[in-house]
Amino acid sequence: MPLTLSPCLPTDAPSLALASEATWSPIPRNKVAFGNVPISARLEMYEKTFHDGMTVQKQYNLPQQKHYLKVTDDATGEIAACGVWVYLPEGYCADDDEEVVTGPLPTGANEELMRDFCRMTGAMRGEHAGRHEAHWCEWAFLNISLNECCQVLSAYVPNAAKVLWLLGTHPRHERKGAGAQLVRWAFPRADAAGLRCYVDASRFGHPLYRKCGFEDVGEMSLDLDEYGGEGLGVQRWVAMVREPQKV
Image 1: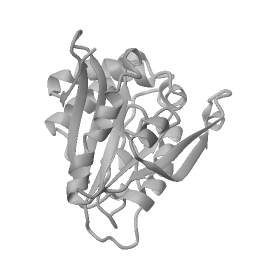
Image 2 (image 1 turned 180 degrees about the vertical axis):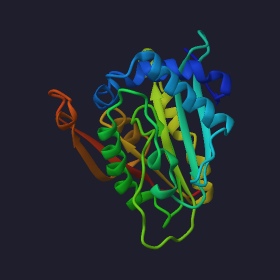
Image 3 (image 1 turned 60 degrees about the vertical axis):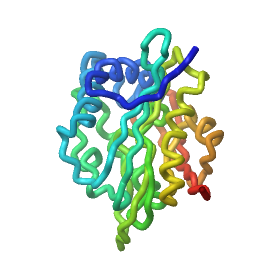
């Protein structure tokens, strides 16, 4: 069935929240991080995040331009997938990332897990998407990187970056190419500017990113049993980079 890629609107926030809940709740990290948070509170968190991000009600310390994108099922009008690409004109720094520094979480959330996860991904992102280099970044449902961060570099050399901040496909629309459309959206823009693209992927998103041309540059892991995961064990994430292609 036909799928259409288009920008998200603030009025999409409730639908994006429902898609987020369907996509994220089964993922091991989120089971531990938000399993004790009522569904209503999770939906409120997701909806507020999307709406505030699109309406610029939040004052970001980290210089950035966010592009909220959706893929819609033309037959039903349902949002099949959503992604957020972020352009970081000065690169990435955790000290300027309000999600990392303040990061309010709903009552019942596993704050220790989220704090350690952010520190872990932040250290890796600092190596590959820090202020020493320009990037596009992607925020993605698949790799659940709402609160990713990066280490503070001892010397900043201002440059730009593109990071895939979020990408996710609704379970009813998996394996239809929606996620790949969202991933590849930034490539012509990154290539034209000579910018590297960065994402850190869970095992769910890793095959898609490899297929789209990302290469592994590092690996991170957390033992969810140490945070109350009850047998979920060690979960791994892979830092991935796509180098700019000649145009």
